[in-house]
Amino acid sequence: MSLMDSPLYRDAVAQLEKSASIMGLDPNIMERLKYPKRALQVAVPIRLDDGTVKTFQGYRVQHNMTLGPGKGGIRFHPKVDLSETAGLAMLMTFKCALVGLPLGGAKGGISVDPTTLSRQELQGLTRRYTTEINMMVGPTIDVPAPDIGTDGQTMAWFMDTYSQLKGYTVPGVVTGKPITVGGSLGRAEATGKGVAFCVNFAAKKMGMKIGKSTTVAIHGFGKVAIPAAQDLRDQGAKIVAISDVSGAVYNKDGIDVAKAIEWTRSGKHLKDMDGIEKITNDQLLTLDVDILIPAAIDGVITKDNAPNVKAKMIAEGANGPLTKEAIEILSEKGAFIIPDILCNAGGVIVSYFEWVQGLQNFFWDLGQINSKLHDILRDAFDNVYEASQEYKVDMKKAAFIAAFRRLERAMRYRGLFPG
Ligand code: GLU
Image (cartoon, rainbow, N blue to C red; front, side, top):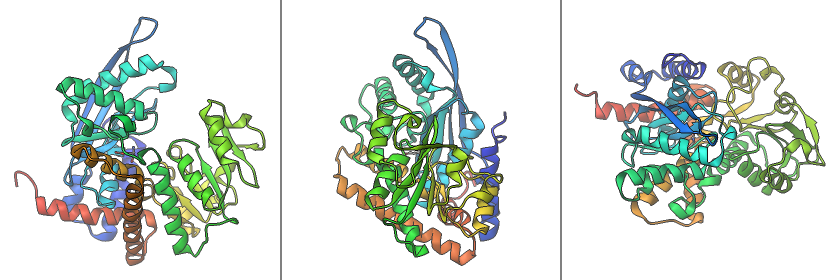
């Protein structure tokens, strides 16, 4: 597959073109934004526990670095390919610009199912991948972070390998690290917390009060979904449905979130928990709830099921859970959509805090981190909302417009090299 052939890449370019034409983005700027700046494909051979060698394909793509070093996660998933990685890197450019970070957009990944590898094999995979892409990353160049299939442990191995190659510890090379090796307080929960903040900002605009009568369905129950569920539950909302790889579960009186967290953390499937009813993923997505949070994977709401979605507010916790047709259908129906590059930006915002803390070796307290996270997201939300009113477009297009305004200014000031 060529660099720009995947559905995700084409979708990202289509959204770029659409919003660019609405706002009248400088065509020379758009011409540059359609292509990633730099892309690397690497072979990642590892020795499996049975002694045989297996080679995986790895990638790192930097889309645009006008605003600062590249930033974006590393994904371990069988679907990862060069073009999907490039599309996700492009979305990171827009996400960082939208929330005002001095960072560009990048993404990386390996085409692998990490659940099939042992801890030792995963460590070997991460260390070899780091070695293969090390010339392209660094605290002032490109700073990876966790994404689907990777976590704090992956980042610790990445940081250690990079540091071994340099001969000294370089905490600023990745974010999302465990606290004891230079991670930031609040990073693990940041994406989900940001989702809950955005849900509250949207509720205010809609005149909806988050409380005992608010019902929420969440697709997923992982790194993003859990903190979002906890925060909304703490505000009194009823989490009526969640899901994992085994399918979706439902309880009309509200799922016991604490129990479900304990259950999944002990490695058990949600479907085996008592006090719940098993439903299909499609039933979860089309439940008659106030708020729907697709927080697992991309492309779960399409033109086929969008007409049946009943939620008044949809918060895109995952990257790209609604296809562009689904966004059109649901916006037309009057649903309030909080777009992914805003809704899940909490992760990269606290990654930015972690990067700054690592560069200065000076660490902040959690209260400071969460209040800065809240304020950055609130300002970005207001910018997007204003753009949606000004151009009379849905929040998705408005988010791109708000991001392009900042990028356009910066790219114009910096100009085109060599001229
Ligand atoms: N992978 C996350 C995202 O898609 C986080 C990126 C980061 O923290 O750099 O936004």
